[in-house]
Every structure is written in C-alpha cells, then in structure tokens.
Amino acid sequence: MEEEKKSLNFIEQIIEEDLANGLAKDRIRFRFPPEPNGYLHVGHTKAICINFGLGQKYNAPVNLRFDDTNPEKEEQEFVDSIKKDVEWLGFRWDKELYASDYFQQLYDWAVQMIKEGKAYVDEQPSEEISEQRKTPAEPGVDSPYRNRPVEESLALFEKMKNGEFDEGSMSLRARIDMASPNMNMRDPVMYRILKRPHHRTGTQWKIYPMYDWAHGESDYLEQVSHSLCSLEFENHRPLYNWFLDQVYTDGKVKPKQREFARMNVTYMITSKRKLQRLVAEGIVTGWDDPRMPTISGLRRKGYTPASIRNFIEKVGVAKRENLIDIQLLEFCVREDLNKIARRMMVVMDPVKLIIENYPEDREEWMETDNNPEDENAGTRKVPFSRELYIEREDFMEEAPKKFFRLSVDKEVRLKSGYIIKGTRVDKDENGNITTVYATYDEDSKSGSGSEASLRKVKGTLHWVSAKHALPIEVRVYERLFTVEQPDAEKEADFLDFVNPESLKTINAFAEPALEEAKPGEPLQFQRIGYFTKDQDSVPGKAVFNRTVTLKDSYKPE
Image (cartoon, rainbow, N blue to C red; front, side, top):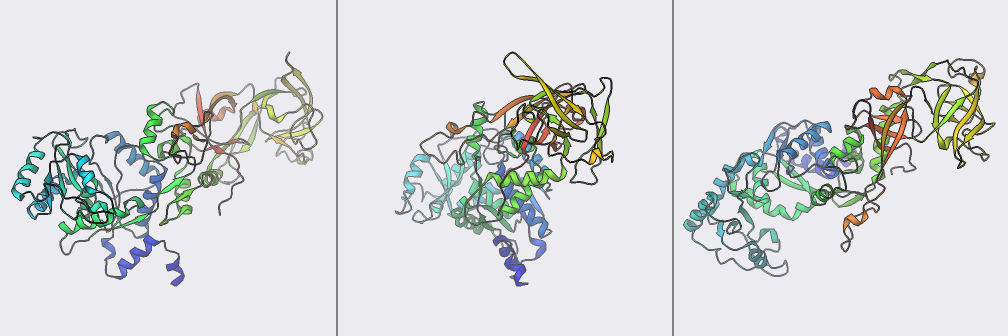
C-alpha cells in the first residue's frame, strides 16, 4: 500500500487525501477549460491528458468548457478545432459547456456583491487603476470611487450592461484589499465594457466578465471538485477562493484549484500571439502547418495520439517549470510508428539501375512484409522489372572497403528480390552518373528457399520498378527554429531564429501501392523515415509529409 502511494503524482495524492477526508467519490469532477482564441498546441496536451487521465483513473466525468469571455479574439472556428483535437487524442467529455452559459448568473451574483458592499463601479481608465495598484513592496492607493454609494454603483452597473457607456469608460471592481501583498487581490476588475458581438450570444451583452471572476464561478456552477491549471495561476488562487466564498453555500462542492508546471519543449514556441504572427506573416501556411506545434499541425505531420499520450506520461506531472527535449517527443512517435506503420519502398534521389541479364519483357511481383513488427499486418506484392530506380547514394563507382552498398564488381541484395552485382555506368558530359548497370543471380530470389537465396551479402537496398513507378511529392520537414528556445532572448525577435531550411520539397518515385494510402495513415519509407499522406493530395499528385527520421541516437532516461 505504501509503495502504491509513493507512485502517485502530487495531484493524485491531493485527490486521495480529499477522499480520505470525506469527499464522496461520485462527487469528483474535472474539466478542461480552453479559451477558444486559437488552436491548441503541444503545451495543451499536458492539461488535456492530466484532466481526462484523472477522469479515467477515478471513473469521474470531465467537462469540456470553453472560457469564452473575450469576444474580441474568440471564434467558432477555434471551438470546432479544439473539439476535434480532444477527440483525436482519444478522449470523450461528459458535457460541452461554455462560460457564456453562465453570463446571466454571473451578472446576478455581481449585483449581489455590489449590494453587499463587495464591488463598486470605477470610472477610471485602466492605466490609472494599474498605477494605483503600485508594487508588491508598497500598498496600493484606493480608487476615488471605492466608497461610492451602493445604489449609485447598482445604477451605473445596469447602465453598463445596457450599453449606455463607451468602452473603457467604466469597470466593475471587487472591493477586497488594496494593501494585499498579492497584486491580484488589489480590487481586481470583474467586468469591462466591450461592445463586440460574441460567437454564441451575439450582441446581447455589452459587458463581459473577466477571466478570474468567470473561471472559478463556472467551476462552482458545474460542481468541479478539482480545478487543475498551470503554474502561472498559482498566485491567482487566493482570488479564486475569495470569489468562491462570495457564492458558496453549504452542501455544495467547493472547487479546489491546484497548479502544475507548464510544459515547454525545445525548438518550439507555444505563445498564441507568436504563433499568430507565424501564420499572419506567411512563415507557415496556416495553424495546421506540419512545422507548427499545434495539435492539428502534429496530426497533419503524422504524429499519432498514442505517441503524444505516451510523451505526456513520460514527462510526468511536476510542480516546477521544465524544458523538455524535443527528442523525447520524437522518440515517442518513432517508437509508436515502428509498431504500426506500413512499410513502403520509395526512392527520393533516383538513379536508374538496369539489370542487363534480366529479360526485357519479364515482370514479377515480389511478396514483401507490410510490417515485420506486426505478424498480423500481412504482405503485399511489389512489381519488379529489368529497369529499376535506386537511391543515388546507394551506388559508388569506386567504393571504400566499408561501403556496404552497390558498386562495380560488388554484390548487394535488392529487398524482397535478387542479389545483383554492379558492372558499369553511363555518365553525362559533366561526369554525373545517369545509369548504373548490374547483373542478377536468377537463383537468389528472396524466399525461394534455394541455396543461392540463402547466401549472405552485407548490403540490402530498396528500389522501385521504373515501369511501375508512381511520381509523388515529398515534403521533408525540419525544425522550424534553429535554437532551442527561440523566444528566450529578450533583445531578439523570435522570427530571427526561423530555420530557412525547415521545408524541402522533393519529387520522388514510389511503388504503386502508395497511391492507395489514406491521408494520415502512418507509413515507413524503408531506410528513409516515417511519413504520412497529406491532405493536399489530389488524384495524380500524391503528397507525403515526413513525420520523423527513421533512427536517432537519443535514448530517454
């Protein structure tokens, strides 16, 4: 029992203590509360996996709640993308909810707080309010409106609601403690005037609640037991609890806010504002560009839900901020794809190979494994003929001793095919090799069981039949940034570190079966890397994105 307790992360320990202290198990409820002002990124996957993972562990419901309190930046497009991302990661929510569901209740509670002398309407601009808060080392200065009569604040607040004042001219502030060492407690703004249409409520509201006011009260209305958020909200916790105290009634669950470390990954940025710049300035093609750290970008690049969930599990739940090596993420996707990806033969930089003693009119279909790691993956037939394409780097006319590929007078095996020996080459006027010639051992066909087929040679090459070759476009993606922390340098613009070689487009040849691949299907181009078919593919022009290279020396701790 003691060993089991030690294996719990600190959030699980908190939940276990709450259960031991009387919290009924059927009253445990979690939520994932994104703001629909952009696409989810790799950092969000941690919050998703933590909340939904706890839901699975405790057989507890998890709400998907959109904190839609800022109509200036929020759109239905982002709501739809968030739902798609959460589902793709393999999670299902109990209820789909919105902070805007509670606008009337939040307003009614605010009116009650004014009546109790706990909130007041302030007519100062935001700059003056900020100045009066001072610094943590010195007490703030009271607003001249802090002791305004209750009836006056009530009347002004209703006029704010009705749209009778200009944006920025007034706000509703909580009346707490202008001398608090916690700056969030120095009479925070609860409502501001915004005459902007909301993606759900239209033009009904002219005032909108601030995040700190709406968030905790939404948790309370939904009876969320544990409100889990990232560390930047730790110093907001006293305000979260103060707001809850104003509405809490006995018998209800009082949500408990606890914070975990955000997840930062090397060579990535997760600021929505900066990601927006990448899109707006055309550095990437959109939010789902495979170079973006968005979940939609990772999905388009060929990452799998299982690999991301495994990555989050390896990262763990920590209390302190940490920087995670992107190689761990790549290790996790490589590990998963090795198990599930269908193996295909693709030649990226082709040179023609002619097998001189193979009959010109002969054609064979070689049987090869779809995935040797999966005994249930089956086999497929690959066309073989006298003229093939091989990788240019797989041939060297005069090779060193440890070159285990094709060269003149040296043997290699063609995968699932025959053993061949290089004989000669043709070159163009610049001395570049245009054609490689070889002979084959007719008795050496793979799987035939003949003595020659069992003969060992050190090199095995992939190939594509020239007659049957499928032309494809391959997009080879590298990291978008050239440094580990592109937004760490305060003196430099993060765009200064954009990798100009982050995308290379190659015209390649593939075996014909690749035409039937489905967008998003995991594939391994043998001896090259892991790829997936892109949504840009059209009949006659298939496009494939590189997910990750085939091998890496990185090993997780």
